[in-house]
Length: 338
Image (tube, rainbow, N blue to C red; front, side, top):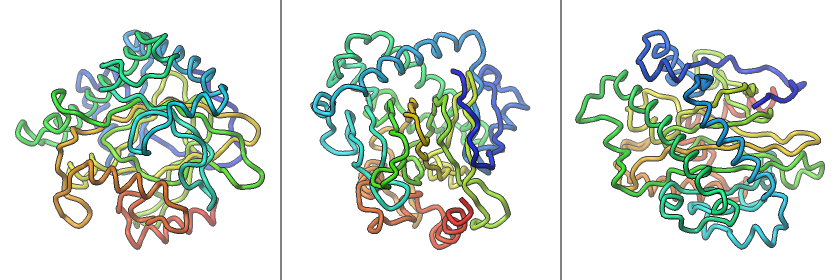
């Protein structure tokens, strides 16, 4: 996947690069890089340039090509597969959520859940037609994510009883899914713009993007308000990985659920593919107030917040309740700087 041209806006975030093949072997240096990244920024590059990952990247290219064609279909065709709610798998049209500048969003997405694709249930015709490619790619994403999760669990010394693997069981339903995304070019009217700031709901997120647009609220000092929006550079043969809310809470808040957003490109459509590793639906975690909550309750509340108009959103909850009052200062400073 070749990276697009460098944007005129800077700065570019200095993220750690972690080599997946070495993480499998628990390489000490690579594990140190991984743990440093997820405890400070919550984002890192995952190098997938080893020969065993070649098949995964080929499947990614095939799936991306199929979905790019599907997104060019009329809205009436795509809307036949619209989700019942934003918490469901299926198609989300442009404008269903708040955007980055007070209006509505400028992206559409098709999500294929891991349970749905394994059962061949509720799939759109192009995914059904290329089923082996889509299902294999989804399993490969799940494997990579789970291996990272296992290594993180071990590095944190959680042990067998508290292992993160216990909250990601294969015998229990979960919301793990692949999302195929399409962002429209910059709307000069400001009506539909980008993907609003947020943290992800689940555990780990793999992002495959060959174009610019993704930004992270990057730490620039010791205080929570010392943050600014920085661009995340697309890199060939790399996934961009970020920690999500549930992993932040399951690890006693030792890991950072990264705040991020996507801005539209001036004159071109943007496409990306994301895999969301999410916990078993029956998982309990302690929230920002130390209360035991079911992850599905958290997920539902967060999705409802996404769909609300910008002026009615709870910004603290939008970013996982991670910054509370301090986040307002950080976000205001970042917006003024960007």
